[in-house]
Image 1 (cartoon, one colour):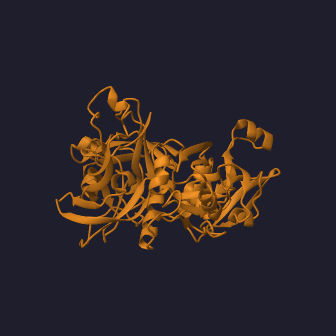
Image 2 (image 1 turned 90 degrees about the horizontal axis):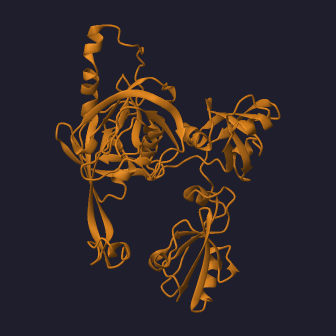
Image 3 (image 1 turned 135 degrees about the vertical axis):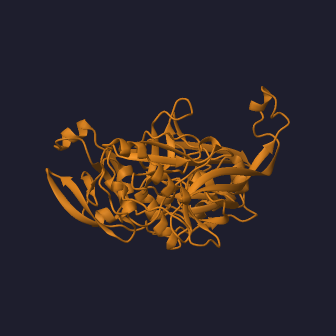
Length: 466
């Protein structure tokens, strides 16, 4: 079972970052008793001052049911009772990224928090606010308020990390206090392995990571951050030596965008769909081995299409790095950064070709034309938008999706079962291809309403009475 490390009272997260690339020292195996006896103590002393504890509070809606303590009836009355706001406390960790007080942590530690306190190792305490967050990456950047010059640790280019390197994981497992564990980098370019919010591309390590290490630092022998610990593969709930960390190259882009004033992480838009190549596909394409991403379709406005990429091409290199899955390709684009142009190597008709692709945001064309239904409507507060490439990227839809998306179901829409990200296909048998068409169909509905929506790979019909 794959677990995203929880953030709760007695569960901390940690991370060590910065924007400066350190000089790379020669990596070697200890050869003398003196080197072995030295251990990692100097490295830990160097890293520890930049490690912080994070205390976060958030308001959640909870239902009070008279059956909640009954072992039988509580399963039948989960949604019974009045919904009341409650304060939820979480305890996590983070790492100071820069002298001016930028801190990295996991989204699930601080996401939605209304009050955040950051406590340094020397017990100094500062208020902080989330300045940039992304649930899909499970990363968040915080900024300390009214803080003096802070200790921090540098970021290393995670693309230069090799399997077998010695690493330390620093965190606060089970809330027992700052703890250091050692191991090696066990694997690179792991994709499709994390659960929960985090998705994409990860480093793997066998350094012990347990609940409470969430958002913690994975550092190399020079004291530079190479990854932010985010999840573990486990059957028991504890560490089995298979942990995953978000690469520091992506953290660097989060810091850069936070400094530019972005509140959510902006990813470059590919505007296409593709698949991993297995042995059978490789043989049919004339490749000597499996590898790369087979492009199955491109949006007419895709920057890859503008660069000359066609359906049936195999993307092999992005910015000089091999890509073997769509997730890895998007990761390479993300760490290259918006506004840049990257070299892309593709395979077509038995030969390799090089093209230059501009990394841009998904366009808002056609306009979203967002419409919010008023109080007199059948579902007041329902917010609808026309699907365009930016909407597709925001909700993770297929690149060729069209129609109407629900941006906010509103209080009544949520009650009947509508969700943010649902595609509205039709109402009472009438196809709806615009927000205005949805509003008109609801206005013309009688007492009974049947809304058909596309939710992921499922087509769902929601019926209710007005």
